[in-house]
Length: 383
Picture (spheres, helix red, strand yellow):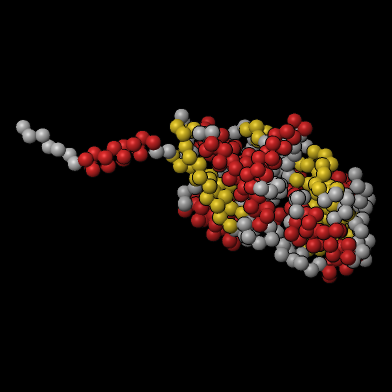
């Protein structure tokens, strides 16, 4: 019987196919969306950097799911902090069959985008969206690793009255879901803490791209407030403080995590005098966690050649929390690991992470800061 010879090229090709199949790794796609252009780009890029660093760390340590090494990849989209663009970005990521979503950055983008991820069955963890609406839509796919506006605003209102002695308060917001929400909760908290002795002497609004506040500040000046609360981001809060001082308004400026950034003194310029700003970050680092956070900050600076802003460590923890749920479920399939994510427990850089029935972080902490010498300075951590 004549032996049929198989051409060498076919043998080599088959061997290569077999080797590739044997070595193939499952690819786990992590989505991210936030403002990578526009006034809040520095914050969106900060969050993206934290997400990317987590993905790189998971790959570097050979993370395994069900005993098999997997490769994480990051798919990022720019939503420009615009709700309409956010839904387009969300649909693009959903169509790409991402395994999990980190973001969006703002409440105004996270809320409309969340319906798309819910409809696609994709778990979504925001590292920064604080509006209660985000997690109260009865979507089992929405989670966050920071405290919400109910706690943030109420705690700031209480601090303004009880610690800063504010009696006459002006409140301004930028009409975004985040800005209006945190400003409303601040007002409630201040009134409750003041027990009738506190006046909200003005309730004004602007928008998240405004640069001229002369009209509303002139109105506020006549009411002589001792504190101005601003619900919005640093790109508006900085110029707002400049114009407050130019008009002779000497009141402290208070706000949430949107103005609690390393960029705030630069945006406010010389008007950002020592202790002229009081703000709160939706998260809290206990003394036990300070070493972890310092080490993360050093790694971040080495990797990106710049200091972290605010949200990067929360985004990092969000990715790691999601990966932990995948490992526990022995699957990166969103439908399989989603129930595990709902009951996950993860000891992160920013603290212990576990979620309540809404997807909000349990026992979320807040950190109060001021600025001294152009640097953000800790006041206290509030539980």
